[in-house]
Length: 423
Ligand SMILES: [Zn+2]
Image (spheres, rainbow, N blue to C red):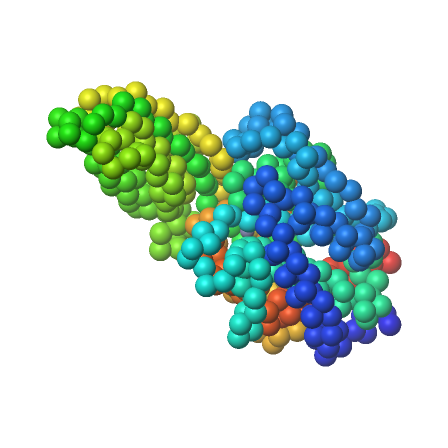
């Protein structure tokens, strides 16, 4: 069948027929906990799945020197034995498209989950598991779209399509950055991140900051005469709250469409070892969402000033404020860009309604394509709940819906380029 003749009904039927296999793939992917540094098993499953789909698959190393790149996040450890997976169809010089997904997931606190976070379970049409939403469900959606197309004998996507599965999207972005630096790109990029079937077009600047304070500690008997590390931490948290207020005063477009685009999240506090000891050290790790007009050096200076001020009344202990992880710049793709319109049209064609577009107070790897390469990139993916939280889950029906949209988009995207070529 010629691509142009594939109807929406056929597309939807092909997606339904292939869905069980895609959901099995998703369950297996969830069962391979791809936490930072442990991505290999999940990447191997991605490799075999994409090979089966007809891609040429290779591993792309992330060089240890990536940390020296001005755009890199601060690496938390070595990249030895860790890799991106790059899957490519033959390229004939025509217009190209890349799908980019991150295989890494954030940690899960087993105690607060209703079931094992790394043992996928389906309840009421939702598949639960760490990463089910962010973003292994997107991998399943992309694979499902391609399987549906192949099932229908489509030629779109058999050339000029690539799939990049990266590490470290959740902490540095260095997986995608390494691929970008290695020259891996395309004319457009779609990231099947969980977007509730909306089109995500932009993200804010984000910097991770670590504060370490050396108090010295002492016996609890002397705690009335010593500075209270717990009190200091509490005062610092208030200070971070005030920074957040300042950043959110007058957000610039397009982020003024969000109530509070710049969240300053205290994600980690380490304090003390023993009830009868005054804590000797304190560590606070903060994720600072901020306007792009402020750079990471300025964020660091602001936090340093805040901590120095608070510690003055606590005996001036030694402290250190450093970057670790994210140093992400904001990005934004305009609503009226042809890539956005292409996904809007495909979705409206298959489902009858145009998807909303949005920006969020977070970031994605799309920023590297947008900011560094001038390549249009957007996120479009399934409906999820509790991303990064307990009982994270993805709605299976939305994986099918998103796959149908993506398949239609791929048909249109490559169909148009064939038409252009023949003109
Ligand atoms: Zn994600």
